[in-house]
Length: 366
Image (cartoon, rainbow, N blue to C red; front, side, top):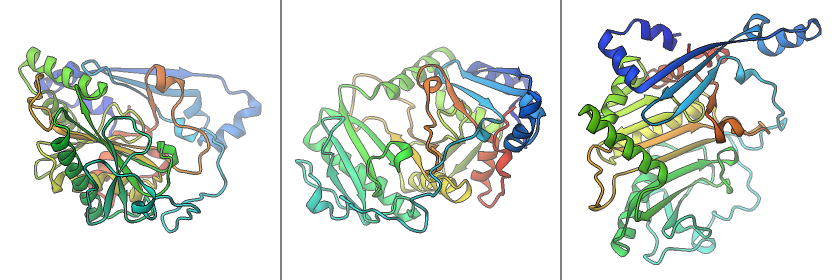
């Protein structure tokens, strides 16, 4: 399996220079002593004494966006308290009180009414994070049994909701879509659903920060930030492109196995690529909880420039439902992202869906 430091040594000078324009790579060695009475435990838990005594720690920093991820090859093997039995599986779902089972009776609607899709319906979020904050409620209750056609419909319906909302509220122009799947992702209701907002005044702060990063990059280097970001991932073998839609196994993931999808427009092909990423989580990695989000350029003209900003989607693996511990702690909240995935293995799954990745190898980036 490729590692980042190895791949970098093989790049032409011009490609390496572009990588260094974006990233700072720091490889450290974490050493410790293992007492005799712990050696059997360490071997059983982590596989060997050596992998614990000499740990390779990789810090990768995007100097332009400020993103930073820390990779350690054994953190996914840490002991974890589990629930013993997974209460929700791919095959069955048991929801005692499914308040989304009959959304026409149990959910509120926006002043401009509901939008109907083939496989979903919109509602107004009863506890709002934004003045225009809606829901896409899936017809299927099971949040993991989605098909390609359904995912395409969920995104199309949310986009039609945004267009309808914009007609009624022209000052609201900034669209954001998010899908939290099950409780490890922050979802409060198990029934499959997604959310969308339409802001006025400005985009959300992280989207605005990304736009500002892209503008500053364009001014300094006379080149598009997103094109060059994709080019770096492409030269490292971390991309896939489908009819103009660009897919990356992201180098500085906010959590495990981050996938970024970019396109000039929100099209069925873009939504189909979203499905591919989520299906990779579910079918190849055994993920039972995830986060997915999407932002677009504004729906109408704004004072600030959005030239070159794509339709962009992010998704991350939030792990298995049986784990009791959260995957986000103080380090992630206040310092840098700590992850235990390998973007090179994720890229292999994205480009070759039938690939088999040994479960204990999904951690070494350098």
